[in-house]
Image (cartoon, rainbow, N blue to C red; front, side, top):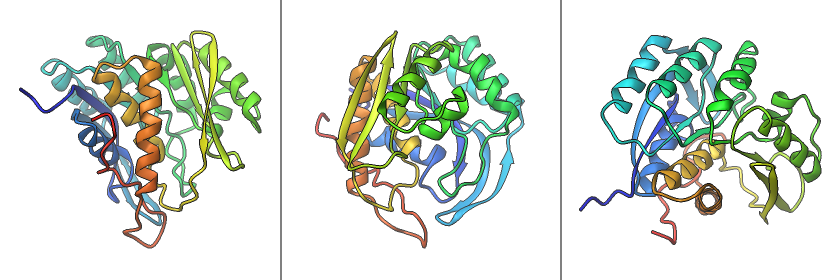
Length: 267
């Protein structure tokens, strides 16, 4: 009998510093006892101090990686992270359509924590028009939600409006993450098929938070692959991220990563 609860795939960029991207996703999958596969979209030259270079993988190689995995493994859920440009987004959409993926989580990675851009401006339209209609869930933070909608977000009500606007672009669910807003309480807004709920928890003050968006979307993807419904997967993903933040550490000179090797209480 396998120790794994399911199989998942991440389509994202590599983080040579190990705190975000493909590395964070696979660590999260493993911590949640889900077997992880991958398609790498870009190689970043990166450490805890910033992104020093980005080398994109040719779109045909991205789609070939996806097809190789999806044609062989019984993948329960797929997530996307850093896609970089419209050509890669189009290739990823083709891969998803070739082997229909029912559970797609889109993390619309646009800017690194250091402030470095990870998405060409022309690619935002491709995300909105091509990728989001394929998604079960999209997980933008506040700046990403503002870029996707053109709205200004300063509070929970603004997050609700943005979630609804993104929902009109085609995904079945939207999770707007409120970590960029100030306050002792961290609020996320989950929108599913026209209804929104606010998920709140005490803010954890830490500088060891590199890769939180990747980690959260990967945890949600893992729980979807393990058989959870969308709301439960989001709740478990948030719980796992909180535990990882509580156990973050500082291996370099800049922002540290979360502690991915924690054990969730439902395992």
